[in-house]
Length: 206
Ligand code: 5GP
Image (cartoon, rainbow, N blue to C red):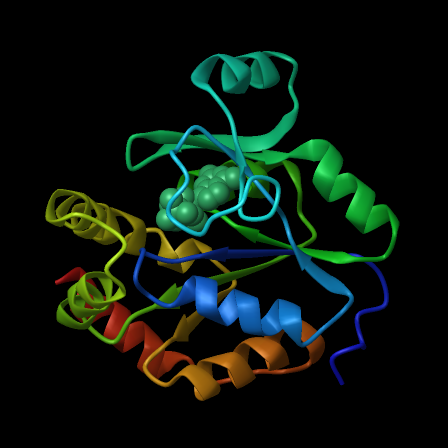
């Protein structure tokens, strides 16, 4: 089933940090050789274990601004105080080779892309609650308290944009969320009742 994509498609994922987006994307990509994750450029410092060219292209502000000036990005945004951008050449090369590309970007990036590209699958991942989100951010131990607080403030802002995505997927159970995403990507006629997810989104926005 996971080889059913006929040509390269753009699949955009967004979520507040801690919603489990990266793990879900990793699972989707590792289960399908026809889907790859776009490697973005960023001015953020690499975290322990991150590799240049695999997790991100870690570049300086000057390099980032030069690329931006040369229109090398499909979209770019300042997220949590750092610059991030999707590289045009990276994405185009994959799509031309019938590889679908997952973009793990923030809502500002999605709004830029959706203005210029119509044929995309867009998925917004929501956590079951803001308390759960905070718990996950603390547990993963990647960020300082200050950074976690910044990410939680941004989470509320990001959630306000969830409804502009084609699909809202609740990640309260990893396997269920993974199966739902798989169906969204591979089954063009797949319809699910997302009223429950929308109700949870409303609670998150309260
Ligand atoms: P992190 O620093 O935790 O890897 O990523 C922080 C946020 O930046 C995440 O929400 C991620 O989706 C977003 N991000 C990563 N790459 C890009 C990109 O190329 N463009 C945009 N707009 N956001 C990105």
